Figure (tube, rainbow, N blue to C red):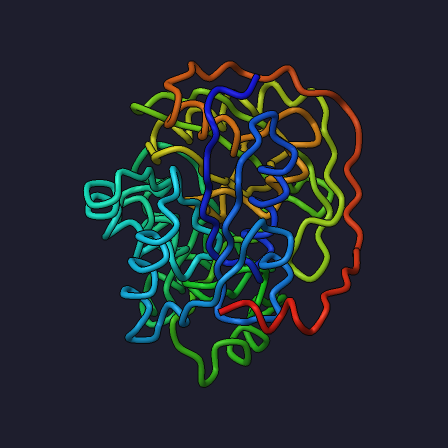
Length: 332
């Protein structure tokens, strides 16, 4: 049941994440007016929304003023962050935006964002909380790297400390391949290779006041770093672990954990996203609409109930849209 009319601002209309948030809003029982923003006028999310507008890149000097201008003009009830590169900005300015405009910003605090952004910090955090992430070392710490090789052997995974969608990731099977993967590169982490493609999962939690309100676990198949098939089923043992991860991290609202499992069923988390996930619209199709959960909690103080979900497979596919030239020209 629609409670009151609401307006939602979604950043990153050109990103998989931003577009997924828009899809989840469209699939919600709450009928929201959606305003999407993005630097590129050819971002499809600008045209799925009720209204789209251009802003500078998050790295450009005019970005802050543009966000303030859009929020002042549109007066949204809630703001959803649709790209990783904007998370730090909104985490830093959340209190100011909420106090100035009376809007809600769905973003975790800078501590949580920083833990999730850096994969070595993710490793250290999970280890400090008593969980069992893949053993990891920094290449520049040669003693630690040697101990890692001695401890777990090969294969090993080499990846950027900060990055997404498997960009720059390689699996190495001996010392010579490791040296080649590290040569001339900085900002890397070397990790134990755990599990297999058949034991890879993506999981989501919604956490408020330090308590996991809802959670979901999906087994997944990857293509080009993105989930293109997701399998829903009874993963109750993994779900219990995921709920503990959520309470240890204590995000504000959504968080995403990516992991593989050992033979004994232990979830070995190698990546955290302190935000909604690229699989958010896939989860919504299973009855787990975390965007709507956050809307109801933050705007209407509605208690979040764990959805029952339903078994099945979600298949991702491409879809095209036509945009007239005059509509593109109208996006300013």
